[in-house]
Amino acid sequence: LGVGCGTGQTAIHLARQGYAVVAIDIAPSALQLARQAADRAAAKLDWRLEDFMSQPATGTYAAVLDRGVFHIFRDADAVAFARQVADSLTEGGLWISICGSCDDRTEPTSFPKTTVTNIARAVEQFFEIDTVQRCGFAAAGGHSFSAWVCLFRKRPGLASRDLAQAPHDAAAA
Image (cartoon, rainbow, N blue to C red):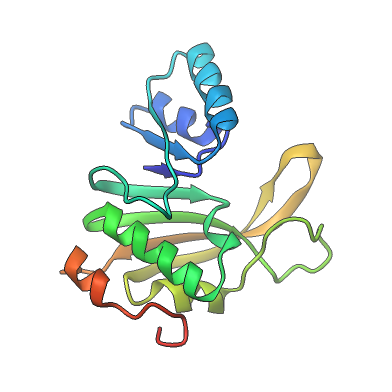
């Protein structure tokens, strides 16, 4: 499941590698561009106009990828996003997240950024943290920024009913 797929570049790449991809975004214009790009690339994907935070994803997935979505949330909203990702995953499923990093303060401030502490607070009740690694990430307009590449594994035995009972705010996390 690709959450916040935007114009679909990553989703298309994964589909061309043989993965069955469901790609969702809240913006109809982004999905229209993504569909056009997929047609040009002869990539088969399931594109969906959905608000991931307002409605649960249809089905469960072995993996969720977000590239630049999670890092826009803070505190309780970040916990809610992590909970929604966990609820979208199968037992032991993986969440791959690419987040802007607050560590390099020389980069443009227009890019959303977060800290490792914020990441851990939001995800650890739902996920085992496999890796959080710094990388450079190229963005539109020739800019680049430091990012966190995160790999989380859904905690064993964590079911939807457990998620409903989990704390709803970052302070409780």
